[in-house]
Amino acid sequence: MQLPPFNYSARLDDTAPDFAPRMFVLARHGDVAGLKSHLEQGLSANLLDRKGDSLVMVAAYHGHAAAVEVLLAHHADPNARNSNGQTPIAGASFKGHLAVVQELLKYGADVEGASPQGQTALMIAAMFNRADIVTLLLEHGADVRARSDNGSTAIEAARALGAPDAVAILAEQLAKTRG
Image (cartoon, rainbow, N blue to C red; front, side, top):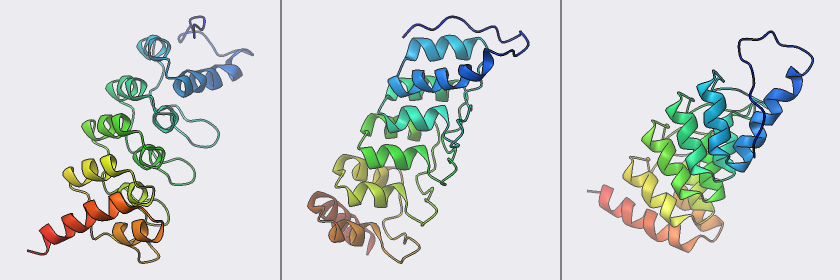
């Protein structure tokens, strides 16, 4: 998607209100070239929409690892929470976007960053049987014994939602950590 260049040094005028939404369209569609062009002209990689979603959150949720990488390379915050307290790593874990989770971790995303209900990315990945993401998060130090606000661990959440692959991985990890 090719958008006309934006003059970052110009005063904002009556065309500016549509600028930010256009940047979120680029993130939603994973338009790496468009994002990179605007970032190189001075666009803040930490731009937020009216719901408090960052460009990284939008690109992560929609599974665009290359767009996430470009934003993070331009100093986007990998842990920026939206207005609901959700993180990009939790969104990507929920949607099952392994490559996005890898990029977020590479750029310092907090593997333990919990949602407002205390659910970690590991718990979310486990609930939806995202075995590859569960494994990756464990490899990056996710706490298999962490509890959400309702007291559930990742393995308990996975069992409750019928996620057998995640249960097996988590059970193996728990066995290793019992010592």
